[in-house]
Length: 98
Image (cartoon, rainbow, N blue to C red; front, side):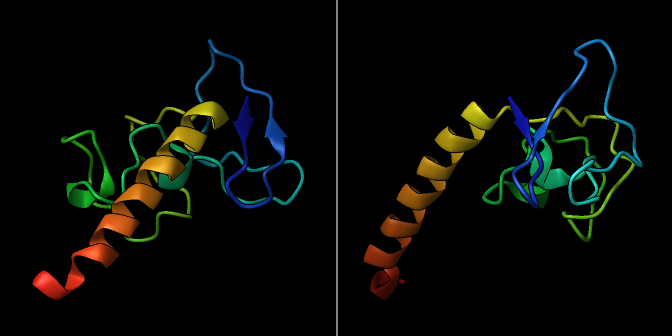
């Protein structure tokens, strides 16, 4: 299941057709081809992307022309949230040691 990053509306995605650069959510009209909707998005990685050959994107909630974009599955998103929460707790625990 694929969800819009802005309104969490379920997006139907044809597995044989990539999301267009200018595609938007039918519910809230937010851009869909954005970093935070991509499986490679990782705020802890260099350039906030696990794909090393991607171009720099200033606003990760606006459309971009990255050719590596793959729409994230909401199940993947849930597991990533747990990882980010765990990292944040560790950072908070050890912040005084820096």
